[in-house]
Length: 361
Image 1 (cartoon, rainbow, N blue to C red):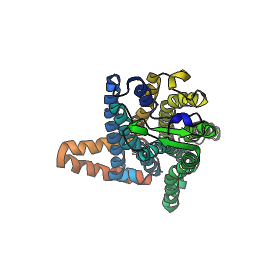
Image 2 (image 1 turned 180 degrees about the vertical axis):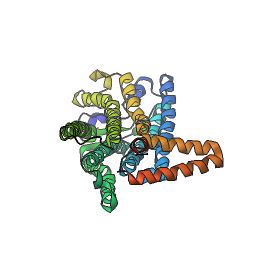
Image 3 (image 1 turned 120 degrees about the vertical axis):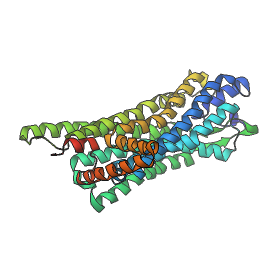
Image 4 (image 1 turned 45 degrees about the vertical axis):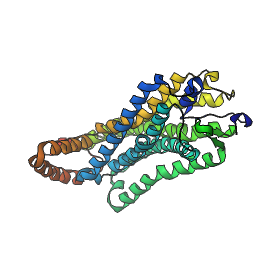
């Protein structure tokens, strides 16, 4: 069935670029060779960077018992979806010049795209909420109660993301078509077009920014209150400051790198022409650039987590153990056991550097 039979205007988020050059050339376009190579390297980097962070936490005794680092792993798992599924399929479409898979995979691809955006943003939001709990009541995340809260926080992004995106996808789409190995086209009912953009990114991003602002405002209020009461030096001051900086950094990366794509996507939604993207004033190069920036977020986020001193130190120790051989591993293990004792005594979220600096020794 041809798309002209549908009265609803439609938009296609992830294959608009392929739709554009298919219309122009009817096949492969060497103009996208450089972009294809970029996405191949990006998919590889996203897989390696996020997997390394997860392995670092699993193998480090001082990290895997911290709620903060467990929730960071949750973010990395969400970003892996981009590297192992979405980015490779997008790259394949660039290389072939058209969507060459069946309509079922087309539907799964589109659903996964929105789900990944929503879940990854909500996962960063959950890390910010956990840091807010740590700032208010540091002992709340300790013991069996803290483990239960951590499990709940792990599940929240996936449950909320699926509960919001899947029903919209189920009831908001008109049809999925891919005739004669043509491009994958997802047709939406007009009233659901803007909703999916708000639900998958704009709402989670707004909540994330609100929590980050509240986190910093609360820290300022608590610092002023402590000075007025003359409580003296606070042993957790450096760890708290570091947490605030890292959460701000990762939140900025999460929102800023995804924002350009959803701005032009929302512009396409509001454009009622229902034709090629150029009729809405959106060039193919704009779609390609903003999509590349959005996917780049999955590779930048795991690097941003390295701003945490304890994560960086344990990662460095793991690399040193691999390079130096068995002797280096034995020395690192001895150092790790010593650091574990310090981390166990300190409250959740303390970096190794903060612990050593605040020690009475």
